[in-house]
Image 1: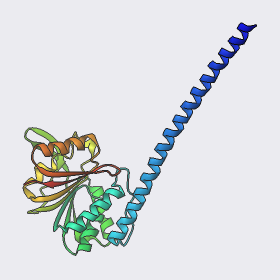
Image 2 (image 1 turned 180 degrees about the vertical axis):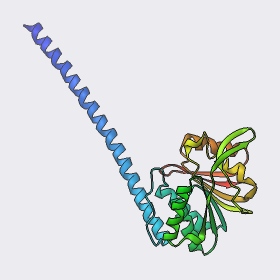
Image 3 (image 1 turned 30 degrees about the horizontal axis):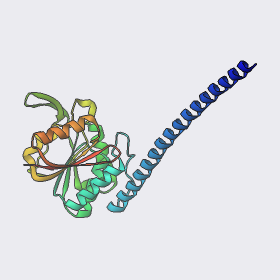
Image 4 (image 1 turned 90 degrees about the vertical axis):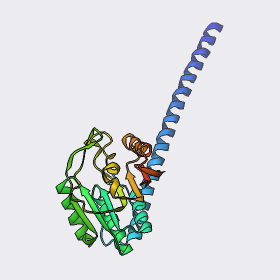
Length: 248
């Protein structure tokens, strides 16, 4: 009889332990999900707040296209707007047109001077950007260039990068890099500084979107190693942003 009681107590303790372990696992899972949900909600709030900041800073006369996803995120675009407003560049070049073109153009318009040259490898998307700029009254501040991706040889390394034969500028005071797409080739955005280096003024500001990705992290490090940039600040945005200064 005593053995039966001890056996029942032992089984009870085992069951209690199993229930406790299960409850603990559920609690930890709920805690993890709660933390992820909080991060998601906080990020959404950050993006909405940044979007409001863009409209307030630039006095836009119409709506921006859909943001995030493959397009620029509001926190990156707000930093871009503030940088252009602060530095008042005369000649701006960007890789990849779209919402960033609108933001830069609106900042130049508010500054009262400057012009943006936007390189786009897609004729269809380039035309959409032109129509968007026209609808917002910003066409005079931007030239969207059809710049198909062509084979670019950099010291024996082959890249598919923009054809810049139509980029007729002597110097570039501000550079925004949000293209070409990652699927183009490994380290797809690396060529921008070697190719345009002769046109970049000493101290030119370079903004690189998607800077949290492995390819972009490697690209920035290579630019540093090659002495193409003298300073870099990494900004924690939704996709990561690097703000650099050209060394010439």
